[in-house]
Image 1 (tube, rainbow, N blue to C red):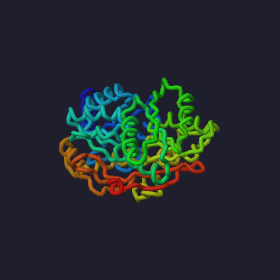
Image 2: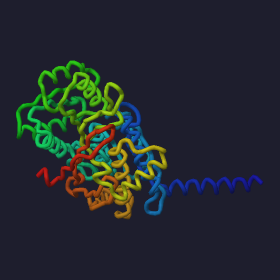
Image 3: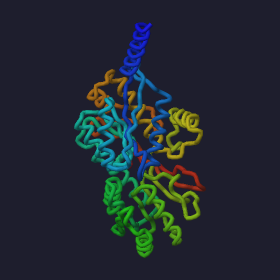
Length: 375
């Protein structure tokens, strides 16, 4: 009898080992706690939606390994080290540019593929082989914002709010100002620290300057603060922000959606409603019993996962160099955010930039600025 139990035990252990060995581990870097936890949760939901639709590659099941970056560069460093110790074949992440740059450096050093869903600072992919992204970059976004503000909003006088603690915001402001200066020299840049700055004071300074448009290149929590204060003081001009805008986090002083706010985005159903987008939205609602709130974070994470699996299939290998090479050869991929092509030289997606405005509580598609228009 003892012998029989020993045999059964060994068989169970053997099957467990074989099943575990057959899994393919994909790491996910997400800010699940801390300052960017809202975006991190949306990112997680986007990847889980994609995984629900496609949970295997090369005939093997995928095991997602999530690592919380705690919304900091230090936390990102620990999270990447953890994922490497788990034997992941590739990593998806992060959201914030400052954190993603840390991840990019570590992944390049360790020759592990990193797919970036939404971090937009150009330096993330510069000089790297193993790092590719599926979204636009801040040099193009800043240029597009400046063109829109000057030409469409007819604004020759602006105030730019820059989060001096974040690579994303510093870079986006820089590129915006460089382009805007080609048309007007009438601008004021206000640098702020999200913890230390007296926002009431800097908003009053803004109002004294009397701009037609206020541009905020930071993240949603600070966009919300500046928006509420401007409205409190009856500012009648335009308020514009970048792609780190999550409308669900931005409310006026009465708790209502930020009426009139204009922001850049990589995705909007009216602009790029592909069959893949429709499938993503339906599956998301089925899984989470709600409509998608953060279109960009959910859809880009969804696409990052699907593009990674497509690259693994085309590489016909789990070798990181082969996967990274396949990523740089993505052409006309039918994603939720639209048709995606990745530049083989830069590792950046060749995609348009959308302008969206909150109207009656809903994000309304305004305009699309293509790469050709920015040349």
